[in-house]
Image 1 (cartoon, helix red, strand yellow):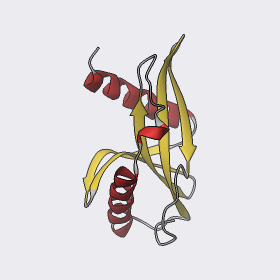
Image 2 (cartoon, helix red, strand yellow):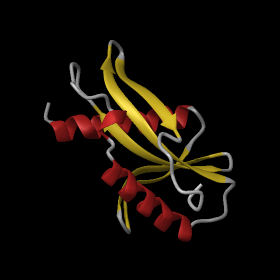
Image 3 (cartoon, helix red, strand yellow):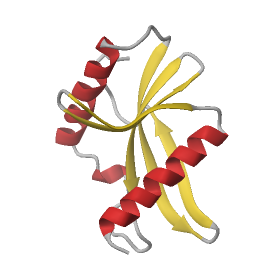
Length: 122
């Protein structure tokens, strides 16, 4: 399986995982000023901006470690763009969903507030 297909399957696994936990998926692969948001979801009064990082078995770099400062800045810019056009909400969280193959399918770990963002975003 190629890396693009692995990424697509990982994203699908995250969407299923989020829905099972009460999230409403608002957007997928949303292009906004500054970059792309893999998944935008809402749970309660919080909006989640989720970067999906899928890794095949034996990958040398952990999924969360692959989000460098340039990518973080693009995510923050895209999230700000989304927030300017969104309905009011209690808070917003930048998150990384780490996806890896497991014995029974994909394993998903969501780290909300995975990295610091300016107070004007959250």
